[in-house]
Length: 138
Image (tube, rainbow, N blue to C red; front, side):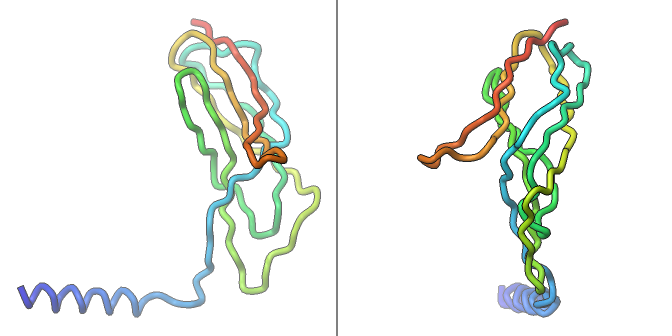
């Protein structure tokens, strides 16, 4: 038992000694969608479609990291995720740096899907969405 504790402490010391203060700090941030384009009039089951999602990049430290898609029945709440890397020399805020990211959607069954793209928060702090109801056909 004592040997295992000593091994654990040695591993812990080795791992902590490998970390550097020079490594950039980062976190993930949800970014509001400005507009959505290329939504078809109908999706076809098992046929991929690419939707163009446009957002404002808030700072030079923000970079696209993907989409967060929450599935709740026929509703998809979609949010853009940016990885924010805090650099030693700081970040510069950006005014009109529009970026577009492709979202591939591949429906698995017929019906109707509601795509809700996070577009920010209202004055009460509640999320708002750009919402599209799209039929899915065989």
